[in-house]
Image 1 (tube, one colour):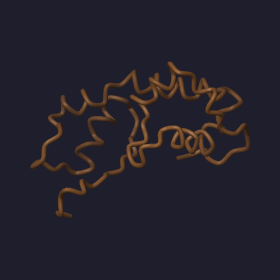
Image 2 (tube, rainbow, N blue to C red):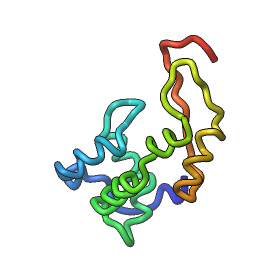
Image 3 (cartoon, rainbow, N blue to C red):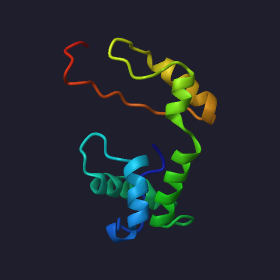
Length: 120
């Protein structure tokens, strides 16, 4: 994603106040490594610093949470009959299409394989 790797203030964990931290744990968790704070630090240092002329660190994360709240992607997918199912598989475009329709933006998605399954 762009912009990235701009000059600016380094991430300050003290600025992720308890209410915001609680919100971000729901809206922007580290689903891969489980270390939310380290994940947020990486996002701020790579992308957030680029917004620093208009958004400080607190505002950057607050805005990201507000964006998450403004679109219920789970509901968008559910309305397109895309719901978790152990036997059903979808093409990337099947998932992108309803999200793009609801938000007007093309999402960038990454798939994470279930280690319990041995299928490709």
